[in-house]
Image (cartoon, rainbow, N blue to C red; front, side):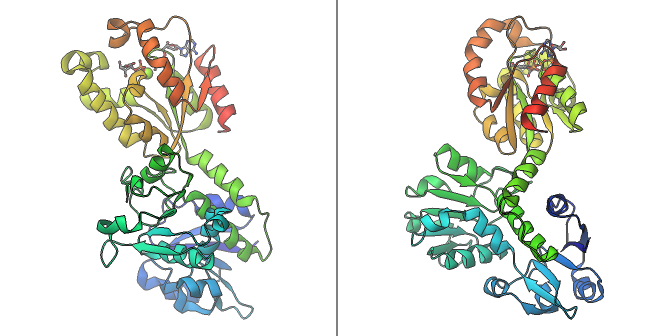
Length: 405
Ligand SMILES: Nc1ncnc2c1ncn2[C@@H]1O[C@H](COP(=O)(O)OP(=O)(O)O)[C@@H](O)[C@H]1O
Ligand SMILES: O=C(O)C1=C[C@@H](OP(=O)(O)O)[C@@H](O)[C@H](O)C1
Ligand SMILES: [Mg+2]
């Protein structure tokens, strides 16, 4: 049962320990290091192997006596393991990670033009793998010959790969390019895994294009590293099983539905049942405004309230692994949809019959039946899962079961 871990600089939010716990029964710890400590750490360590991440993937090469062919092709290492004499061998399993993300499309895209956004470390991996698959590519960077100002030269691109950090947590919502510039595009890949769906991937979905995020790449590079650590092959399906498990764990659950249907109460029950943190958008707005929702409506009107609601949602929906109680009107603003979708699923609490109206200005002024008429199609369209239950406790149990939380 060897001792392994991750070397990098800022590792607090790494998914790697959780992923490796699903790969094998070995120790896997985080080793945040300052740059001057890197060489000494690798020299003195009695560990059996390490993953290496930003900013040390190039620097760690100088501690390796031997490099794999892939590490040499990419020009950096993300995994070091022991040679028989105890020296370090450097490998790069990001290669396996990106190859896995490409999947069967690698064959379909052979000879077809691709566009790689960004020319940093992740871009080197992507370019090496594309070249090995016979997929010709152009690289877009912020400066040089081919920049975001000359994208129209690449309107024939059939594959777009984002390797830049644009749209990555905490700067969610930004997108490196407008996919409408690429009418022949048939696959969009993003190496970012937080959020699960970047703005780029959400636009691809909207345009009906197949799109995949970086979590599958992260899982697949970890599985290959696990094989090197353990010295044996692991099941071919393991990376996909880990991707699904981590997506379930880190994804958010947002409750939508009519005012008074039980979103606030069910969110709390689900929080208790799963140990997940709960965020109630209405309560956050009330706290920041210092007055109840009904008073915000009366003083500032619905449009102002909707702005506050979107702002609160934008902050909350960036987080991972939480339960979100929305307000009943969240579905009236299309801009709220990508905010919820970037990191999770919407569960519609479909509660027919009479609903409480106290403290709910629109239920009182417009009326519950008229609100239902307007909104039911929206709840239905936004819902990834629909739940009807006789109590909030029951609803929470059903959600936990259906989503395997
Ligand atoms: N499935 C349910 N069946 C019956 N009553 C419920 C259910 N879920 C919640 N309630 C009750 O309905 C009321 C409104 O719930 P609340 O959570 O405030 O709704 P929302 O946040 O959707 O406006 C509460 O008194 C709550 O206990
Ligand atoms: O349906 C709506 O438009 C609203 C629902 C309320 O939340 P609940 O659904 O929790 O009552 C609150 O956001 C506000 O009064 C507007
Ligand atoms: Mg509520």
